[in-house]
Amino acid sequence: QVQLVESGGGLVQPGGSLRLSCAASGSIFSLNAMGWYRQAPGKQRELVAVIASSRSTTYTDSVKGRFTISRDNAKNMVYLQMNSLKPEDTAVYYCNVDATTGDHRRRDYWGQGTQVTVSS
Image 1 (cartoon, rainbow, N blue to C red):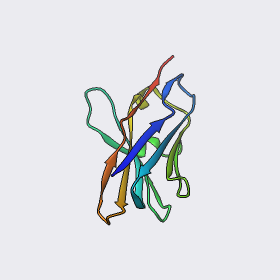
Image 2: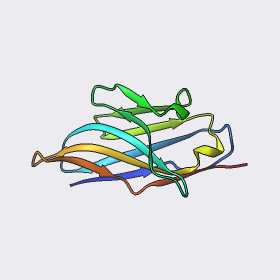
Image 3: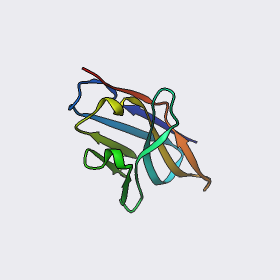
């Protein structure tokens, strides 16, 4: 099993910045793609950004140029730097990791979510 713990959410004014962190722990053999999703009230969960093991990145159009995803393989961490935040970025943000565990089983894992609120 792999456990994911997110941190860094909070309340920020429009135009502000936040940095989300996600720490993976447990029986990790390898971490494949790592990403961030978000879910706003009344909406479906959507992909925000993903970073592959090759470090190639993909972003949803609405955050391109504002958000940056990165990973630290030595620390089993993934980050989301969010700049120029807008009220429409308000959501619960979830970390997602495609992991292979020590028994060589591969599956997706989710964090518990961290609230990001952008409001004046």
